[in-house]
Image (cartoon, rainbow, N blue to C red; front, side):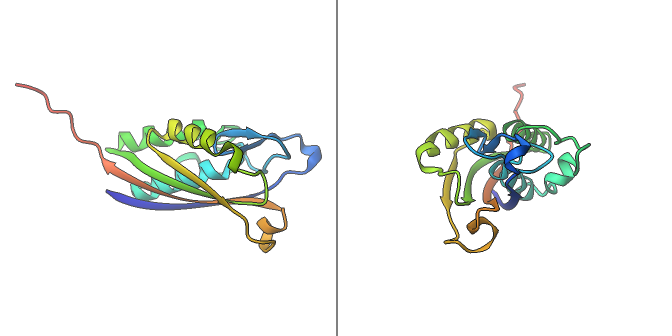
Length: 164
């Protein structure tokens, strides 16, 4: 088994930007998050954790960076599924993962189980989700943005044995 860690942070989009808020593969009420993709920091941190554990780089390595990248316009769940396919192509599979969202909003508690199901379905293993605030400190505490930290375990895929 191998462990990896990932981190992501984004600013909230302006109210007039009209961007939907995506977090942990779910749409939430409120202003969206800036980014070339849907800005889902939970999914992005998890992608980095999975790739790190498999020693396959990071989200920029797999999807590129910027408005013309392979990740531009994509949702976190789609990006996670692409990441898992990439891991499988390289002989690895997710075993377990955990994500911590750091933000004042949205409030995760009422939708935690739904978010865990969505993340777990996208990755193909159990994913736990927790949330915290920074008690008013920093950009997350002042409400300017949202961040996430993720850890993931991956393991080698057992080769399929063919019978003689």
